[in-house]
Amino acid sequence: MSVSYLVIFLTALLANGLVLAVIWRSPAMRNVTSYLLANLATADIAVAVFVMPITLVSTLFTGEQVLSPTAVSPGFITHS
Image 1: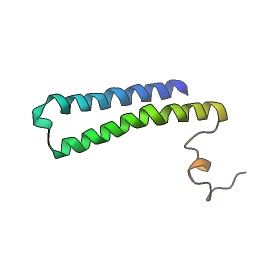
Image 2: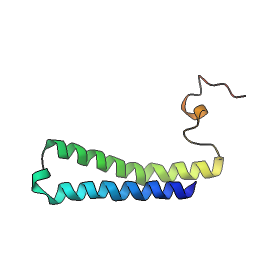
Image 3: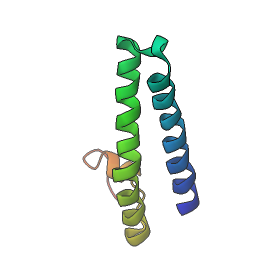
Image 4: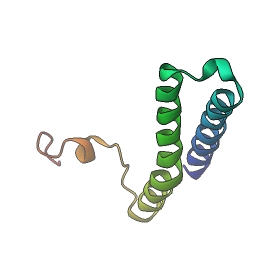
């Protein structure tokens, strides 16, 4: 489980870092659409840095999957 979190974490940092680097270094990419993509990449990096470690620790200590059906919609699914 933690290996998959590490792979996703590193991929998110690398891919979004490359997006930001391309927008930063290329003057042709400095337009409104690219700025929106840069904002998305920045938000994705923030999620990877701040949210993913918390969910990893929570999953390891409680054993409950974060995106399990009972966690996503507890009002619609009854525990058996």
